[in-house]
Length: 174
Image (cartoon, rainbow, N blue to C red):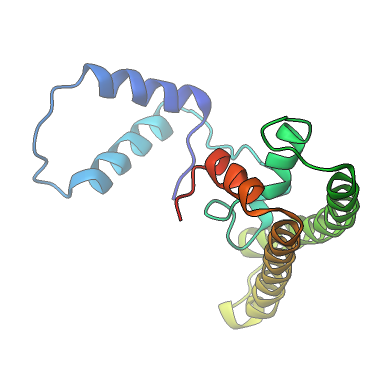
């Protein structure tokens, strides 16, 4: 899926708001998106991905909750009511996880850059590139498992009410 720049996305939002609703007979949403992408390409607009480091390097990077983000935002919230011991344990967990996540994400980024250059500039077969792709996939899996472990360990430190607070802030229903 192509990533739009902020200007391109803003243009799409403005154009979409002004457009009259109609039923597309030429492939629906996908065809419309491809048409917009072609128009942007023809206009000379660059497709540059804005990185969300390290979030973009997880195997599952959009559909997993980020408990540490909620902790960082609401650590001292009276409604959450974390004890000093809970805060201390979550801080220790966060430090351990952040170091590992950053380390692995940097490895993934370097390998993806290497892969990109091999795909674009080196005449290699898919079979020759596959080991590098598998290595990247394994690191993304490792990173995601660390994320899941972090969620589980954080959850184990919370009371039911505190966990419900996290779920509410994450907009997750039971």
